[in-house]
Image (cartoon, rainbow, N blue to C red):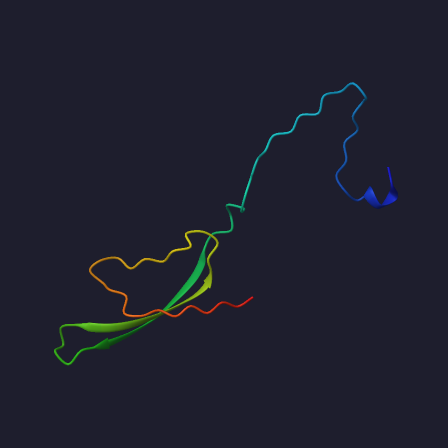
Length: 84
């Protein structure tokens, strides 16, 4: 075995041995979930019955690439900023 491989996992297998492996995971790791932070600002309307709010959501989306707004609320506008 080359010396540069000595730090890597290795298995001693005889010439006629059968090597079997089981796939334990494919795709993105399940422990890496969406990590989001919500900052919400509320403004009470002059009628004192309704609110206007602004949400700033920051973090990392690793799945569920769509963000929805539950009824009865409506999305007025949205801005998306990507940082690499």
